[in-house]
Amino acid sequence: MTTTATTRWGDAKEILGAAGVTEDPAYVRDFPGPEERAILAVPQLIQAAWKANDADFFADIFAENGSLLMGDEQLTSREEIRAYMAKGFSGPYRGAYVKGYPVALRMLHPDAAMVVTGGGIILAGESGIAPDRHIRATWIIVRREGERPQLLSHQSSPVTG
Image 1 (cartoon, rainbow, N blue to C red):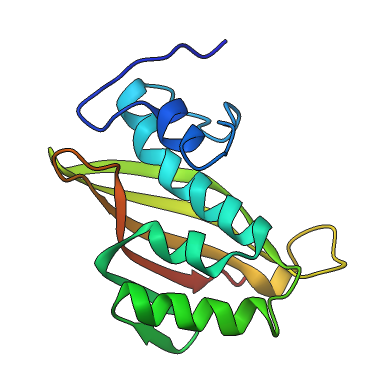
Image 2 (tube, rainbow, N blue to C red; image 1 turned 90 degrees about the vertical axis):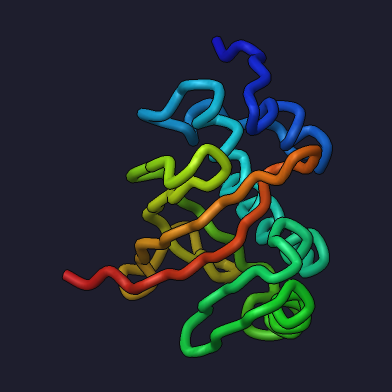
């Protein structure tokens, strides 16, 4: 059973609940502490935005000056991210979603964390991540006073093997 606990990063259930997302206790795996769970709410929000194919929801998880490396596209603002994902969700990513899990979490500063996840994109009609779409992703998640944690930077790289 997961308990509610507010940290300087906030409360995971509240962060997720504000977006209509239910916390997945299994997602946090080896990172069950309340601060870790609040930080890991951000990747869970991204998964929910993908599941909804909602570019606005997706982009609003990022800081205004957020950065997203998606394939060969380096996007450097929330609005660039929004436009890119809107095009993707109405095109090649229509019906797609992502699934992932945390591999590492490291505090870089009291208000900045780095998370490494594994996972990948599941295209419409697929039941799992295709071997050529397995990735490792690095997330820089920041906290600003009075705001929910935001994604500052996300970069993914294919895992081959």
